[in-house]
Length: 97
Image (spheres, helix red, strand yellow):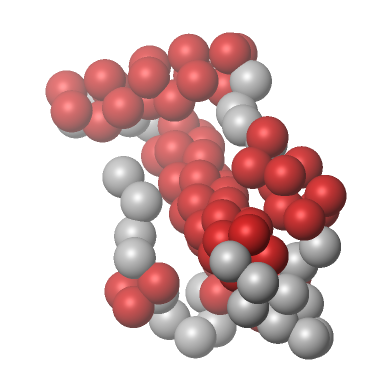
C-alpha cells in the first residue's frame, strides 16, 4: 500500500511535507524521534482502512471512499517516511555519528 520515495513526484503532497519536516541540520533530536515512532493510526482508522481495502478489492468503492482511501495512503506514506527518518536519527545518535 505504501509507495517508495523514488516513486513519488517531487511535488506530491507527501514529498512536499517530507521536505518541511526534514530538519535543517539533518538530525532529529532523540526525544522527537521517539515521539514520531510512537505515532500510529487509531483503531477506528485501521478499521476504516480495512473496509476500504476490502471494497477496493471488490471494485465497489464510491468516489468519496476512493478519496478517503487515497488520503489514508498519503498519510501512511508520510508517516512511513518520517518514521524512517526518525529511525535513522536514533541509529546515528546510538552509534555516535
